[in-house]
Length: 181
Image (cartoon, rainbow, N blue to C red; front, side):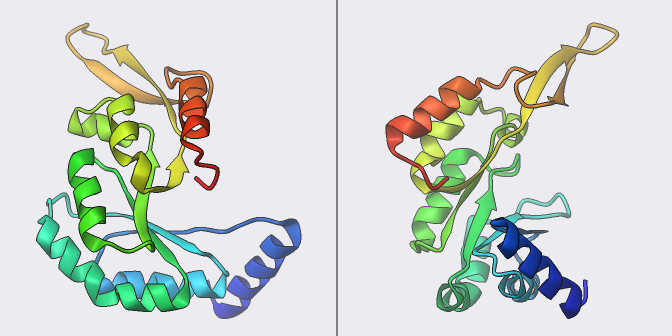
């Protein structure tokens, strides 16, 4: 989008009382800085991302190094980086990464389905990431047998029509006192 379109979008969102988030893939500093510029144009306070698009699992040290290069810029601009849980890392690793970065401008984007790819259940993920969560991505799902009956698929469903225990999730956040997620 060109600057004029971004300006129009920002004004429309503001007039409608909508908060915009900017999303990307990857943690390369150049990519995050490019999307920070877009976030600033849109008055977005949150940039969300997943770690890697190539399928390779980067080391936690590499991620820390890359984010620390640009973190002072994000802090100065008042834009938070939300790192989405994904199958590449267990929720325990994501929590450790965020803790090591040690900035209120870096947190978790908790996706209610993504950690199935890391063989983790929702309650474990929520309990491990709750203290670090700055953004919640509600997705419902079902687990269905494949036609030959020798395996399963995880498939998306409209919210409330799958297996996501939305009532438990909302109760959990209320009890934690987390109204900003």
